[in-house]
Length: 511
Image (cartoon, rainbow, N blue to C red):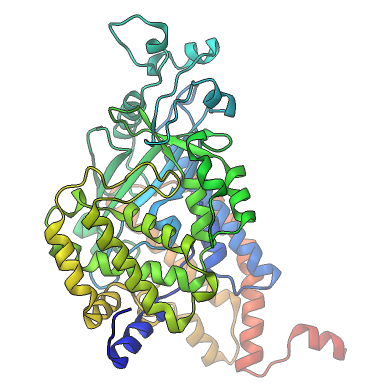
């Protein structure tokens, strides 16, 4: 690390360490809830968290399932959270009420790649490209997926059995447009045309009337990226080098878990293939195994880049993207001794990541983490000016610190946002408890019922109906019992701590 005054280093270190700890390595909403509230030790709290998580998972799956057929082949097997939400690096600007994209991987049912498909050449894999083709050879599969096979004037057997990623994405887009928007029926949504990219992009725009009317709608604009994927067993033959190369991180147990988790191919087309290998499972496990300091440094790195990138170039998306930043981090962690990740050295680690970004852009060379022979930056546009601007900022620790503070909400900001915006009036049951000299679980239940009534009224005013009354009542009934059990335990603890009342177990002992 270049010489810098102690004060600037201390302030930057503090900014990094003050970054909130977000759930990471999550595949589902239930994973996130389990990590957001890890301090709940009692049985009642864990039961409530599990019920809430399971309901959210079910809701997300049912919402996405509307965009698939009810009969084979085009059906949904699973939906997974991906991208920055999964990594715990999503950006939420509480002042501007904006958030980063929400990415989903949609796993197709009725089709799966087994290890023999790689060996037999049905899945074409090469060391110098992440793009592949998938050929169907099973007669039943060929008949089932006939509408999604690539057509050609050439009547060769091989050509006629190649699965088309474009046709899969076109079907999804067609289904999406014919149904209500996902999650937000009150929003106007724009579904982008299908191109060779991996995702179907949906831009959701809630009306200003909606955001003013309801305390539950705060982020008027949101973008969803849906990526169709096919599950694959084993590990790509073209990435065998990753399994055994010398490394400081991760350990062999993690490597083994990654191999056993399998991989995916996603619908991204190029001249080299109709699909692209996806290491989503592997990357999720790796991010989950980052230490807290490594993850905070990763967020700081992305915050620095996110804060200044539009100043570096108006065309920054054609130069580098968030996947490049993740790749830089994974390479850096692999080569770093875990014992070197201390609070005292955290500033040096962040500056090293910035140095690695500068080097990659300058040399136009960033080997893919799992396939080093594939250069992720080979085709990027000229980045000379961007490199110079990043290099200037790299030695300005004050500017790096300001970027992190600006992009990262503090714990206090989160608390104020939740209490004033997401759950306005949440202090009421506490105030009632203080006034009565007794915290009552029914006061908390009444508050949440009032919130739900307001939510229902918002939907009625906006759409003329509740979002799904049957599902809503079912969810409420499922949550009622575990919620009351937890609130009973919570209020008992509050009454013991603040009202000096004995715990029930103490009363039982004295009887």
